[in-house]
Image 1 (cartoon, rainbow, N blue to C red):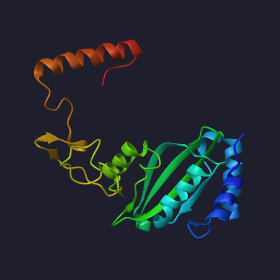
Image 2: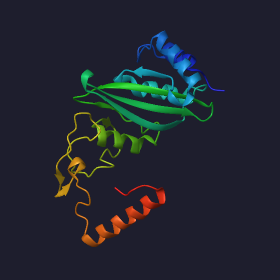
Image 3: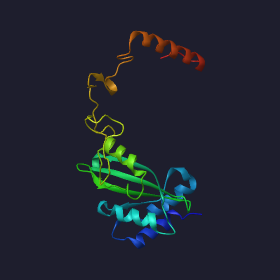
Image 4: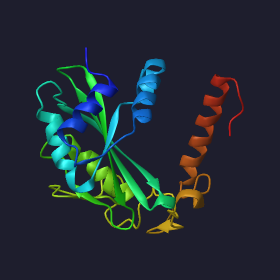
Amino acid sequence: MGLTASEIVERVRAALPDDIIVATEDDVAEADETKKKAPETIDPFVLAKPESLRKVCEWLCYEPDLRFDLLHCISNIDYPDRNVIQVIYHLDSIRHKHTFTVKVDLDRADPKVESMVPLWPAADWHERESFDLMGVIHTGHPNLKRILCADDWVGHPLRKDYEFPEEYHGIPCGPYVTEYANIPPEHEVWLKEFEAEDAAKRGGPSS
């Protein structure tokens, strides 16, 4: 069995006291209790100082009884009211069967943090998505460019203050797209017939 939230957080506190922003005992207790009730909803976590993220992650990756050998996701949260972009690293230990989450708060105006690709190669595409959609600069990444939007896209679409452009190279975008926009007439007929057949199978009207 893997370690509990309390055990992992205490290990990090003891080993790297100057590299994390310490969670309170109430935070740890709440994480443990929530995980008992709904294990899929929360992972234990620490908040690392941005300049210490690589050090914290290396320790978690190589410490023998922790061995977080899999990075399965990087996610971001935009907090405009706090001027923060939070980057969240979701870790698993295949060997020990426990999970952990490392969070880091970055300056929203200039969100930069070291790339974790040298530790976990899976970070490659996740960091590119983080850059593309939220504007986070993962310094030292081997190929930090957009992965979902076009290279010349302007802005970062998952930021809360993002405004969709009306068009991209003449193509309507986002809320400016009208139904069947730019679809050739023969394809529009086929699409409407398909939607009607699909709605009939589902037992409801077509849109």
